[in-house]
Amino acid sequence: MEKNIQVIFHNCGLRSYIEVDLCAECPRQDDKGCCGYYSPVFYPTDLGYLYLNQPDLLEHIFSLEHLTVLDASVTVNNVIDGDSYRCKFHRKEGGCFLSQSSRESICRHFVCSGIGWWEEESIQDWRIFFDKLTDYEIEINNHWAELLKEQGLTLREPAQRERIFMELGKMYQEETSKAADFINSMPAKECRTLNRTLRFGSDWQL
Ligand code: SF4
Ligand code: SF4
Image 1 (cartoon, rainbow, N blue to C red):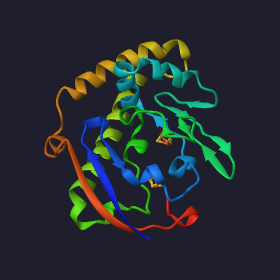
Image 2: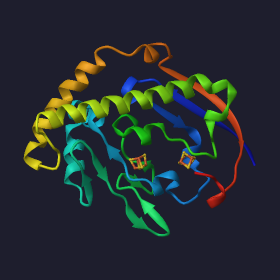
Image 3: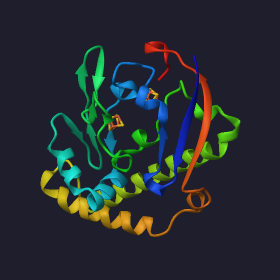
């Protein structure tokens, strides 16, 4: 079955994301799609953004069970569900209940191989953008983790978390006050259409 798929690229700097209309009727047909195989990891840029924009969600994340808390990141581990897993932010009806900008970077950028938009010659500008953005985020996250370490701060110590969130909020505000050139050079939003042959269930590649 042939299908036209709309891929919408949103350039929001460090909160950029990719939206795909097919996800609402995911060919995996298991009510989970790619989210059945992932546990989101929130890094310093995510924590700084959430502190400034959604402090309730930040509090909620750290109140969940079975977290993996490292010095500068927190993983919200998924739970076993049938023959795969379920992310704690996923609902059978409606999918992820986090807004796009509240998600961590893999969740904002990931698109399955079945769609494989990055293989299209006409979309190489966005492939380059998201490759650069990924490297940029990793560099900032590593740098901020190092700054926290120099101050003797670690998320493993619950009493230090509020101070860490405040520090990361300040760093986030400072970093986003000036956008990098590669961010300024792309439009805020652009839609591209692809045609793909759909396969269903486990035949649809994640
Ligand atoms: S597997 Fe593909 S179509 Fe399904 S939810 Fe994930 S990105 Fe969307
Ligand atoms: S946070 Fe949302 S997008 Fe990410 S794995 Fe969980 S349900 Fe999917």
